[in-house]
Length: 384
Picture 1 (tube, one colour):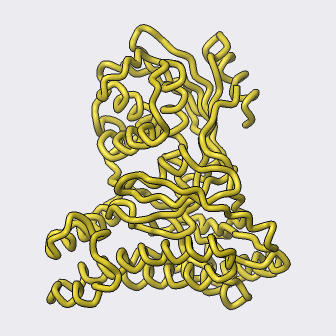
Picture 2: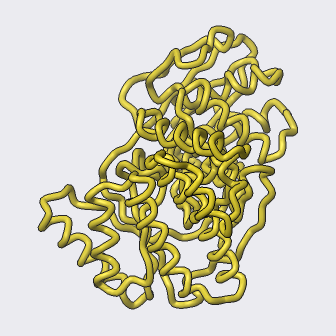
């Protein structure tokens, strides 16, 4: 649904034109998985798929929410009674942002909101972060809060961590808020310093495909939380603030110090090597050797599959089939337990790869995947 359609739907719902329309994109993480909550490095870029919101202010504390993507009418809430983990429906994401803004002392006195999204849900492409960021940006503009993008991202992360109850890191919200068209975002999640790295694949005869396996995941589920807790245990056992503080050169010594903590050892090994993979990809892109990032992506998948253990048969099949069909590199992206894989390929091989992936899923009797091109796109912005 385009900006004008969202605007018209708002007017039909609420009987008046909205004060504005905003959008925020989903994201693909090129490299750097499960490093964000370890104070490490990530490298996402924004997708053209986005959440769009038409919004107007209210002065009576009422929050009215509607989505064209969810069955049902307008949901009405009171801003004064919003409480963490009080809601397990889609409305927890926009309501959580209102709660986080108000808790931080910002004078948000209610809103009428209509939402529509083209970001696939449960596909590891940050549909929830897009929803949060578009609300935060709209309310920040309307209430003239003057918040920089990184701070909006922090507030959205707090909404998801505390209000929704999903222990996610800061990457998804920052990517949605801060990415630039034609670039990947090299983000240090400790201090939120950023560098926009040029990433124009088409100019080099390359494409990056997303393979949505149609296997749904949920970050609020227990397995994601277990991995995060295991990483925190590893940092405590090694006497560091976060696993980011273990230098790659010291990894073997660090693993030896963990004794019989086999599960923790695997988690530590993934995070430390993944941070190093992000730095390798940045160096390759900045040197103009884009094709050489392919094997690094594939290394990342093996680490997520074998050490972090967050892959699944569908993701492994997408990666293995792509590599066998000539892809330059492939890996799962997102939190895992389903979701999507990414495939780096020559432009000329896109159709062959897509056909091979679809046929392999059919042979395995898996649900047919959705395959589409990921184009580095603009971050959150006002449309109308």
